[in-house]
Amino acid sequence: MQVFRGMDIGTAKPDPAARERFGYHMVDVVDPSREFTVAEFQTMGTAILDAADRDGGRPIVIAGGSGLHFRSLVDPLEFPGTDRDVREELEQIPAADLRRELLSADPEAAGAVDLDNPRRVLRAVEIVRLGGGTPTERAATEQAEAVRSYRPIRSFTAVGIDPGPMLAGRIAGRFDAMLEAGFLDEVARLAPVMGRTARQAVGYRELLGVVDGTATPADARDRAIRATGALAKRQRTYFRRDPRIRWIPWHHDARHMLDDVISHLQEGST
Image 1 (cartoon, rainbow, N blue to C red):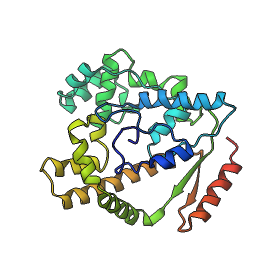
Image 2: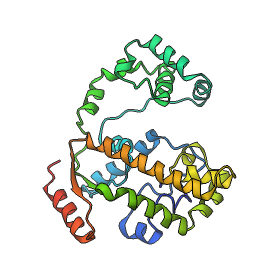
Image 3: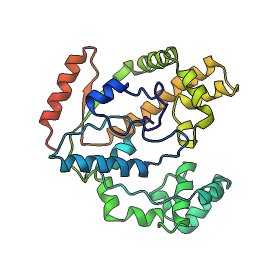
Image 4: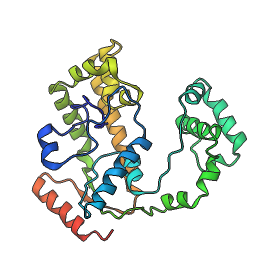
């Protein structure tokens, strides 16, 4: 979400001085009114990584919490096209009908798509309608097998930092600090121009209810903290499946933790 201009406090975006010092990429690249897909992120990020390779292998750090966006840069993920008109039509169809349509086109779809996830079913039906193949056909490709087997398209060393049981308290403290820094004012300023992707950002989504009068600040705060915790849990589950990531515990001494990270990076063989 740091790609969106103006979404600063709620995404913990580095300030201009830090971006200048460390040479950040993929920050402030699109307006929040835009729908910014993973496919677009992949295209933009891959161009940056390829340029670094041509520049003598200049090291790049990929940092963040979205497993799908991370894998879109290092693994052979493909994202079939989308169509706004088809998507809007499908969004009006009941989930049960979409599930039936998908199973009619692909009786074995349950082996590749979580049929209890309406969003994934809708996307699978969209791909079928646009001629991108059924879930079973797409899952049978050599490329899909490489993704399942975590065979990357570029070399990298991955380090994960696990905060352990202190995570819940840190999430609440972090969100309160954002509120004190003016997060609600930021959301109010951006609300008139936020598109669908930006509105789904955790924290922004909940505070938008305060802006439009459907939620109190206290309720929005509690819901945002719970949503952040749920997101963190999903992220940890996603990343824990990746055998390429070396995990270290979070440490109160930042220098000690940094030394552990550097040690793991130096030992990395991929």
